[in-house]
Length: 408
Image 1 (cartoon, rainbow, N blue to C red):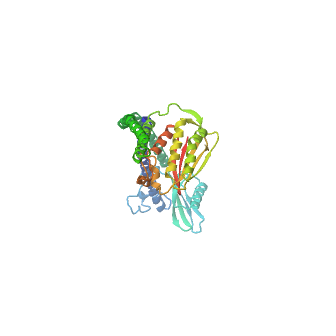
Image 2 (image 1 turned 90 degrees about the horizontal axis):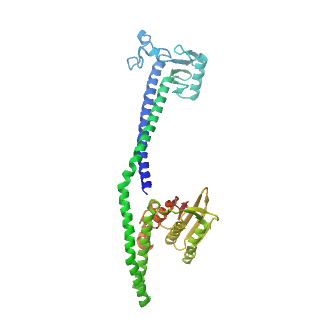
Image 3 (image 1 turned 45 degrees about the vertical axis):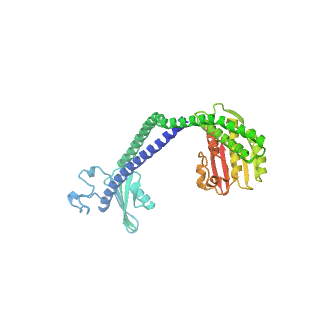
């Protein structure tokens, strides 16, 4: 139990921290990407306004952009950027290529780049390490390409660096949380141990007076015969004895290793034995019962505990199925797992109740009316017992039929 609680604490803490780190990582890289792309686009817009040529503001060959100051250009810019432009005339034919500011691209390659970009239909984007901008309307268009390999490399480096820092940070946090997890859950575990100890002690202390009450009621029944009050005492004392036994069982299943002696056993035989008394009881109440247990099923665990779980589910189905209802038991292989399914028709069960059926002392609204007797911890015992076996239990509802499925 302590180990399970520790791992739950670790999982919750790491999920929260990982979410925060991922958000920060994404925000940082998205902001940097938008900043770099914005700078490239501003440069392309100025180059496009200059007709794909270098805007030599110093020589006043053209006016600076209306934003003023020559935009992103400085005196060192001619030595820092590489670009080329491809122009098309009004008929859509290639009018010329300006590639004075780049040495690695020939006219044919530049024309091929521009043709690929125009075929894509986008006005701006990245292509082969270049940021491009398409200007003009109709067939008369110009495509300016700006070398962005350095910027792309910087973006990629930042992404790798931040991802590496995030992984190292999460690993360090995981180690720290791992070291502090047991200390963090110790107060909770101490309270839980005190509750378990109280339930165990109270259960043992209650057995003596309950035994005395039950024995006295049996003696009165012999002397007084079929007396209504004596019968009621016997029923209620038996009910209270079962509740005490269930509480002690539930407390035991919460221990660190509740089933120390696990062994392989025939699951098929165990389910046949557990279901046999219920089959006749179900039919005696006017309900239909179907059973399909695959031969040769085996499981590793405690045979008696698995039979107890099957009995709890069948008893639950018998209690909550309506008059003339249907109850079914199936057991079969599914991959490497053995699956047990207990289903029954039910009425008035809200979908919202499904998530709480395994909670201790939880009962659906219809059950609280007193129409169905029970303590409300049977399914909690079933869940704890299945998990102690290393299995899983879940519930689903389709229409008016509810199914409990166990995978061992």
